[in-house]
Structure formats: C-alpha cells, structure tokens
Image (cartoon, rainbow, N blue to C red; front, side):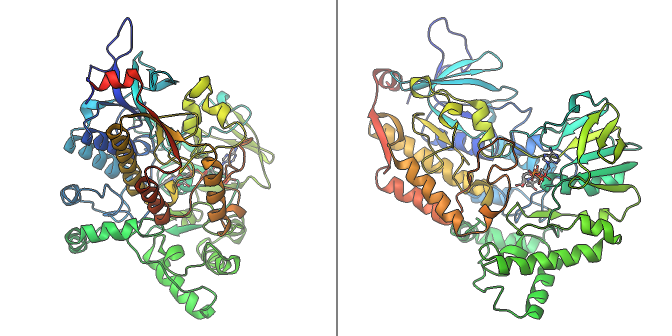
Length: 554
Ligand code: N01
C-alpha cells in the first residue's frame, strides 16, 4: 500500500503522509489500529493520556470498576488467544485490572510502535481536492491522512460545573474523570464530593472509609444495585473459554451485548410475591440482571418499571437507619432511565458517623469558597473537593475536537442546532471521517469493547472496499442522516428512556440541545451495519480517487 514515512517528521513542503490517523487509544482506537494494519495501511494513533486505555486511563478514582457483566465478558472478544491468555480474577474488574489488561493487549498485538501518547490532536481539516485530512497536534506534529478515525470516547469530555467560586478553592480539587496519577491521600481530611452518578456512588464508600469526614452533595437521588463483585470461579472461566465462539455469537446477537438470554415475561403477569422473590434473588446475586434478566418490560412499561423502583426504594428504607436521610436518598424517576448504578455498600455508607448528606434540592450550593462549599444552609468546611459531575457525553469530545470538513465548515457549526450522523459512523460534509461509539450508535448501552470491535471491523471493511474500487472519498448521501435520526428517535420512543432528564438526552449540560444520543437497537443495529455493507455501502456517496490519493498508493 502507501509509503510509510516517519510520522511527525517535519517537512518544508507537505506534511508526512499516512493512510489513517486514529484519535484515541482506548478499547476502540487500539482495535481500530489492529484492524487497519490488517489492510496494510500506515496508521498513527494519537492520545492525550499518559498510557493506553482511554477511559480506563483517566478514571483512576477510588472504587472505579466495570459496571457491565464484567470478567470474562468485558474484553476484546475477537481473539480466542487473547481470551485464553488473560486471567480476569473478579466478576466486576477494578480500574487497575482493566488498565493492566489493555496494556497487555497493546504489547501482545505490538500496538505501541504506532501510538503516540501525551499528544492531543488540536486541529483536523479536510482538503477536498486531495481527499485527505491534515492533522495537527499539541506536540507540533502535522500529518496528512486519507482517513480520520475518531475513537475519542463517549464519556471523556469532563463536565466541570459552573459553580461560582470553584476556581477559588484552596484545597485539592479533582474531577473523577481526570483523576491524578499520584496516590490521593484522604487520611485525616474533610472531603466533599459533588455528584451521585456512577462515579460518585462508586467512590463514596471508599472515600468514606479512609477520610476524616465526607460530605456528599446530592442533587438527584439515585437507584444503586449491589454489584455483587466476587472472585471468578476458574471452572466457570474454563467452561466459557471452551465455547468462546458460541459465547461471542450470543453476545453479538443480544440486545445489550451480554451473554444472557433476555426474559420474555412481563413484570405485570407475576404476583407481587413472585416479583418480590425474583427481585430479591437478583439483589442478593448483584449486577444488572435485576433489570435485564427478570422481566422484559422494565424499560418499556411505566407500571412494570414501578415494581422494580418500589423494590429498590424499600431496600433503601431498610438499609439506611436514619429515616430522614433515607427519604433524602429516595429516587423518584423511572429506574434504569438514567444509567443503572452498581455499588459496593453505597446506601450503607450513610449509616457512618463520618458521612453527611446535603440535599441540594432543598439546600442548593451558593458558591465554592477557598475553604469549602457554601450552601443556602451554611458553610461546609473542606480540605478536598471532588467533582463527580459527569461528562458532556457522546458528542462533547467530538465537538471539542471540532474537525473542519468540506468548505471549512466546523463540526460545531454543523451540529449547532442538532447533531446528525448516518449510522452513527459518518457525518455528511466530513468525508473519510469515521467515528467509533459515535452519537446514534448503541455505544454506552451495549458491551462497549464488543461494540467497538464490530464498528472498527465495519470501518476496516469499508476502507478495504474503497481501496478495492479505487474510490477516494466516502460520506453520507443527502437525506440519509435525517432518516437515520428519525429511526434512532423512533426506537427510543418505544422505551421509557426519553422520559427522564439524563446524559443520554443531553439534559445534564446547561444549554445543550435535547436529542437522544443512543441507538437502542443493540444487535439489530449491528445487523443493519452489515446489511448496509452488503448492499455496497447503501446510503453513502463516493468519489473516484483524486490524483493525490492515487499517487500516495503507488
Ligand atoms: O456522571 P453522571 P458519572 N451541581 O452524569 C451531578 C459511566 N461510568 O461520571 O443527576 C450539583 O452520571 C449530577 O446531578 P443530576 C456510566 O455510564 C461507568 O457519575 O444532574 N450536582 C449527577 O449526580 C455513567 O452513567 C463506570 O441532578 C451536579 C452527577 O453530578 C457515566 O459514566 C463508572 C452538578 C453526575 O453523574 C457518567 O457517570 C463511572 C452541579 N452543578 C461512570 N452537575 C463503570 O463502572 C452535575 N451534578 C464502567
């Protein structure tokens, strides 16, 4: 294929030329590199982080663990060798284990020689005549590539809340998604944490155990289910490895990418006693099965949903000894329509003497001061403040990248009113740009490593098709994005998800437009990707190779 000059090498005339640049070295970007190498392409991966791992490199906060059916299912699934060679030890692996796994894969697949870390992509501009992207980085690199793959993460653009005085805080202040490399010492400190989503709920019990005092600033009470983390049974792992191709097939065909057969029963067909017994069984076992393996209509029917919500609320009342605190912790939205949280002793933490809860709905934050947080009710003195305030999810990192497409149009301009994509993989006006876990893919509501694999393989095959047919550029045809947007909204409208303000809908970021960002079709979505490819990339428009692209290939 094309020449492969040393990336980053300065040139007086044209920037060094590659076939593809990948942004992001997490699960998706690493596998994209592996896939594109299979085509013989020259590829460079850029990532701002100090190590490979994407979200697992940034989220080093205490308590971070996989919240999906974890070991041995949350991993690269394409290679039986990798599955056999890595021993997961727990059902819900912690962040150091997942990061160690990703480092193992980087070595095992010899990925590092094409990954440039601590390098942020600062600009990406498409040249229509050349059919190529020019990419600039924070370290001064300027490279040209025919294809630009954005594997920038769905939950990577941290939401730093606009609270008056935040910058004036004199103590240590960390966002969970940008946790420092060094060990953070909580001993003897008065710690405050703002936010009770998955990150906050995972961190709170751990910090409470090791700090002098923890103040939890809660705006929205949350449903949390016991994670049920336990050591993996080696006999179970052996059994899974022996039938891995079958397990992988089952995951690909399931609604959420998990190797479980979904229930076909309605919660409303069982008696209250039967429901109670089933929910209790899953509560004791732990994990997301309580919502996904019990009844098929928890996320589709508000009455069915209420049965599970009531069960969890009753648990909170039983676990939390102070009834006033228990009521403050009581969630009041449709369970599962914000990300369902797996915890390790979250509600129990509020029985500790060194933990206090501030209900921001009745006692809102007025300001952060140099010495703490001031709410309407008074000052809360703190030595450390933790922001577990989430992300500008799914679209935020892409908009921060803000590539310039045809005619110099930026992505921020293109998406000023609403975002639009075709299949969540490509954007009209931005030829040869592909996204992994882009908006309008199943992304966060599917097994993310597996979803990334399936998307990267589709991109590899698409680029292979372009090369085979001597085509130089591809982008969505007119009209297909609108139809795709309608399809995504239509699938979501049959569920309860759009009824709740969440980061799935963009409601967590002030001023962000409301638009459901996830394709809820799961396996059907991936079947759709295959069908589009089988029909010669239906819905895309292509251009013959430019002179520049032809020259690059010869
Ligand atoms: O973020 P979130 P997260 N004042 O947006 C509050 C994944 N994940 O980092 O709900 C006060 O869920 C906000 O309040 P409200 C997982 O998919 C996975 O916790 O907007 N509070 C909320 O309580 C998850 O869903 C793992 O009213 C403010 C919290 O901050 C996703 O990441 C682990 C505020 C933000 O919750 C995001 O989770 C962790 C303000 N100004 C995360 N602004 C795994 O285990 C925001 N909040 C793999």
